[in-house]
Image (cartoon, rainbow, N blue to C red; front, side, top):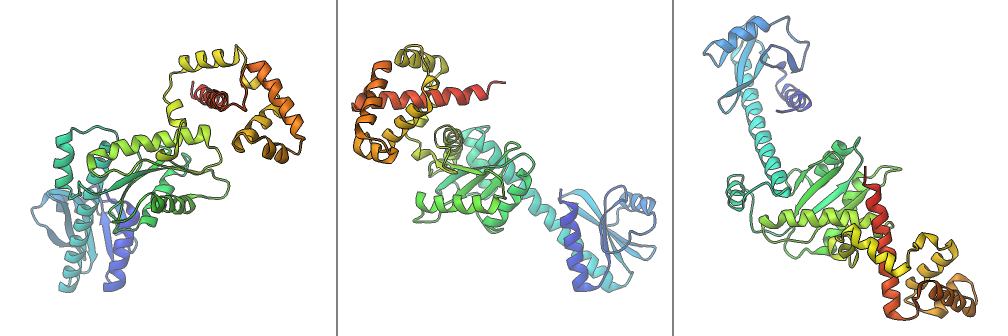
Length: 361
């Protein structure tokens, strides 16, 4: 169904061109949009007109017209006046509203198809049959973006993204929950991940308001419509993994998640067993802030003792002392690559476990 605002904009534009007042009524005779004050109670006139076989007639100085969506009567249109000119304007306006209904119905059908495609609710044969009926290309390169907004602004974000992509875009913008906007974007020849990062940034900037924490995630680029759901699942994982391991990044791509996406798929009991084995019952939370800062800075500098001590403003021997102390308590020497990798993975596993705990209701 077309929104009342769209109906109002349509008849306002027609009046500006023709200087003839128009009114759109529902089946009960209530005004949905009007360029003047609604005519006096005309519910009985509308009921009689609906019951009649005529598609148009003059009643009390107004031309009445029926507006159909295929064979279903949707609206009653009133044009003020009884002249032939008013009749012609009313016929044109009714045709315009009927065309709008067709366009919005097609958009709804496409939106419904894309939602079911993303959620894997379609059989393979149905995907290609419905795509053909809706004139959606099946063998073009696409990628799925997820834009995380808050519940109060998801509808506004949806319209903002649609406006950014433009009305003639071959991209699809929809929502499958109350928090995230989904974009299925078609790539032009020659476009790749670099261009998609720019698109992600532009969409983020368009949606973002002061004080909002907008995150954008994207899946991998796929070449067939049946693979769109895979790109969507990857984008969802990128959104979650980004929150866990890459807090400083507002945009995350599935292809850049590294070991984080492997840890994300580990069962929690296995994670707990791994942490017990590495830290002998202790948790990284037991380390003081100084130790954790030293560890993180050491990793940032690729296990370089000299550069780490310089950035921490401490003597090299002080850093060596801290690393020796850590080795005694954990059995892991961060100066040894294999031990450093084990320790780094353990810290990431702990982060993952903490995140999963926040999802337990």
